[in-house]
Length: 398
Image 1 (cartoon, rainbow, N blue to C red):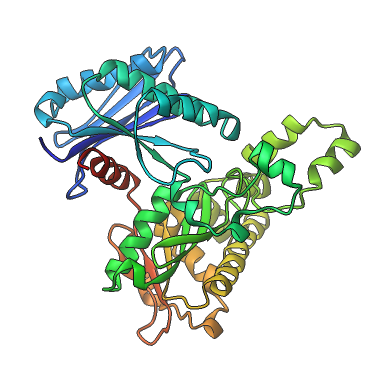
Image 2: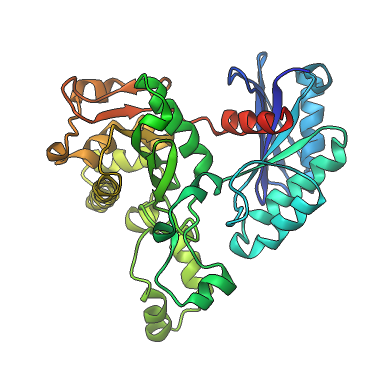
């Protein structure tokens, strides 16, 4: 049996997949199926032989996984010859029940279904991917890896909201945090770059993409994180507002008559950078900033200011910080955002090297702080697929 794991991330209308060697992290092949349920689905398969793109009708996740199996058979590598050790599934919400990856069985499926009210947009799609994969690959062990699991080490005072006990106990209202798979991988990689063990290092991880979150990681354990009960809380994101006055919903409902559903939709899908500047692609945003667009400049400033606030807050939480780590699409590739987010923090021992920061490619972990900076600043590419594969393999090899 090899160390290869097929990683599946099922969304409501898409499916991402990757065949990963869990021991090395090499992505042997992978791709996406988009527009599930629409007339013209798109399958993109990448392997050692290049990229193959085709259009076909994909009515369901079962059709999508069937198309993936066909792509492997036609364009390689063969899943049979790959001798898969397991299938690893990304599951967004594990509530307070799952702090570790879990072998999938009927009880696990029932537990994830019970958590649907906490993630109504994500868990149903994750469940559909699991159920289809169990039908198509009945003889393979399958493992659920939860996006919230890494943050289950938060102390009670960090995850508790100041709301009535009945809300917390009966309705599961608390901070859960997300992007946990990324934060786990990146914080461990940061320790490796520093030449130290994870248990000896305190880091602030900034996962900055279309979705954004910060995490304070002490000795390899998450002790605070910016996303809360839902992914809406925290940093400014591509289309999400991040932190705001919780009375805003009531105000808009009273003054404008908008429903709670409409307000929630706008805060999640039409706010953030898109709401401020009309553009949620950070590359396009920076182009607009360079062209003198005032709305884009304000959006950029608000975005980076919010990151800087969280760095300061998590410095206070940790007491000692060994590194600030940037990851994900914006964190890895947008040097101006890194510079603006850390500007003025020299008093905390954070000294960026302008030349190193501007020269990063985002493909390999690099140090972008000055040699004499008491706190290292790193850029570490995330690899959630490898983390899921590694965790899945650990479960099946126990």
